[in-house]
Length: 375
Image 1: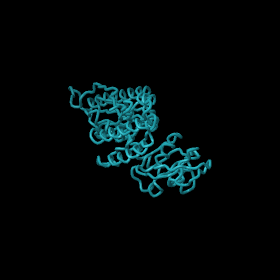
Image 2: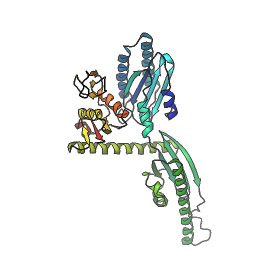
Image 3: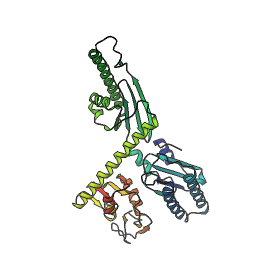
Image 4: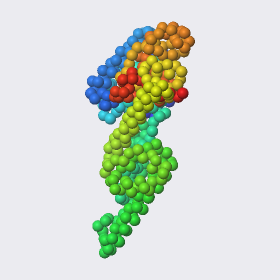
């Protein structure tokens, strides 16, 4: 299993398969939407049927290569792929040219199946473009550990221990005097951790901060943080200082999922309100396709399983639900099996942010798709 990074995307972009095509398959395996393996395997079969249809017009060698791709991808997903906490999967295969890459992704992707001369990398490129980093600082009265999670991976960046006396080691001092001594050492420790964290932020410029540890310590610790760092606090959680790296990654990804859900919910609320008022948003497939044709879409939100046939202009690329002539250039349009997928790809190419809603009645009532507009 290969990890997603810019080096891999560049390598795939430079891949030259020669006379045979590349089969690209993106799959959402998000457990919130597909709790059982058979749920996402069913979606895979739909995608592989599209791949087989696209291969029919190819010459014999290319068609045989794609047929082998289909069998390899099916076998991989059914027999070897273990989902775990993975939410998205991307596979690139060209059996006739010796290409195989499978990537486990920390974010869900839009289901897509394409046969083309080169790998279709747009979803990966956009994922790299908009990814955010999450720093977790785990702190108690005398120790601290700092982690950075990026692209679904986590590394412990530093750990530190300060000499803080134990509350019960009175050493002959009065209880009150000794307690002040302990408190001073603890405060010095928290200031030290805050300074280390600020230096780390200046070096790595993370997007979000998760503060973990005993509540009474984290409350005191936050008071010592520089404003630059404090403004990036996303969540406060409870974890023991001995927490394993995988547990901390799981908590970080959970906070990221919560942030995604909040963003999608807020975008949907804005789409519903603004479109109803006739302002900077549209709701429904037809109006969204019209906004794409005018390159007005800033953010598109689409329900996970929304699909449907439509029309595409081979001349200017305009998408439509129906109509044999293009409303932009007047050319004859052609039917395409899934105009929603085409709209998502067109939105990404235009630089729009595309969000997927896993379950939202308000968006479904508005047609399952909508957009916030640039103008």
